[in-house]
Length: 256
Image 1 (cartoon, rainbow, N blue to C red):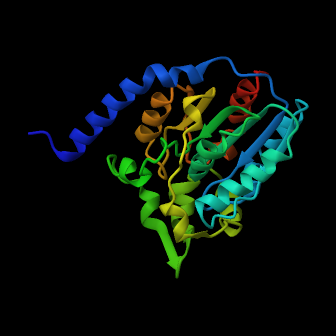
Image 2: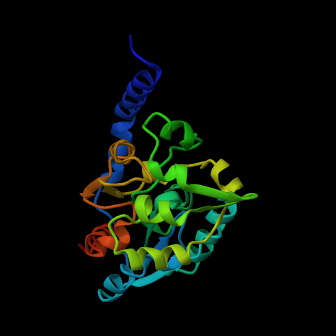
C-alpha cells in the first residue's frame, strides 16, 4: 500500500513534470546586469551576505543587502521592492532560506533580470509551503525554534548544530548573537506569484542542510528548471562557500 507521504510526493513530481516546459523557459540566458540585490532569511540579518558582497563588488557590481523586517510577508516583500526601485537597470535578485518567498514575489519587478535561490524556499503562486515541506522528513532545526510570545528565534545549540554546522564555532556564535527574531505571522504568508516561471533562475542546493531538507531543495530547483549547483554545505553556504555562491550570482548577472 502507498502511504500518504509517498502518494503526495508522487503527485508533486507529476505536477512538476507537467510544469517543466513552462519552467524551462526560465533557464534561458540571463540579461547582463550590474546591480545585485540580496535578501536574508530567518535567524539572520543583512550581514549574513558579508562574505559574498566583497567578491561581487570586486567585479564592479553595485550590491545592496536588504534588511528584511521579518514581520509579515507583505512587509518583507515591500522592503525588497523599495530597494529594487532604487536600482538603475537590470538587477539580479538573490535570496537565502526563507527569503526565497520574497524572491518569488518581488522578482516580478520589471527590472529583475534573474533570480538566485540559496538553499531557499521557492513556492509556486498561492502554494502552501508548509504543506509542501511536510511531504519530506522534518529538518532538525525546526525543533530548535523558541518563541517569546509571537517572536521566534533559533536556540544557540540548534543554531550551531543545525543552521551553521560547518562554520567555526566562534563564527557561528557571533552570527547567533546578531540573529534577527521573526514574527510568527511571517510564516503564514503565501506568495501571489512565482517569478521563477518567467525569469532565468539559479539554485544552490546545500547537501548537508539541516534547516531545509536537501531533497526538498532539489525538488524546487528541478520544478523551476533552474541552473543548479550542489554544495557540501550547511544551510549557510553563503558564509561557508562564498566563492561558489558569488560565481552563481555572477552567472545570473551574465558575467560568469
